[in-house]
Length: 161
Image 1 (cartoon, rainbow, N blue to C red):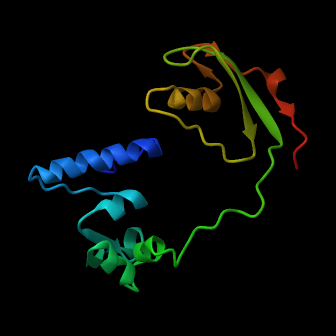
Image 2 (cartoon, rainbow, N blue to C red; image 1 turned 30 degrees about the vertical axis):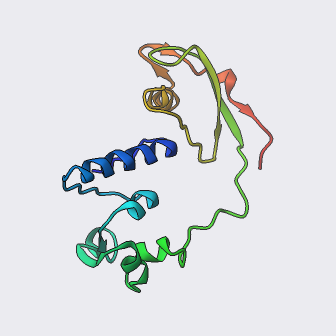
């Protein structure tokens, strides 16, 4: 399981605390995870690899966080030690257009209007059960349960490059 998927980063600490309490009660807790905070909280790490998919399937290293960091073959260790990083882009794309969703108000959405830029990566974030998936569905389909939330007149040029 990847328990931190979909969690707000603030809640990740709460999850780690709960899993630690389960361990402290004598339980064996095994977590499949990619989150750095979760990995660093583990007492023991089994690092699989060396690559993804057909390029993996082997145990690269087992041990503590320090063992993984010191393993030259561990890609996970390279990222945990910051020898390898994913750099932020020097230049961000600017949106060319936008679509406006008007009056979306079912389930947890409260009759919202929102502009979604086009041609860029947009992240919809928030706590669970706050309407993120529904908002994404409305964006991709242009409607929800028979109601139309996007109007062609709402496709606007924002002047980006």
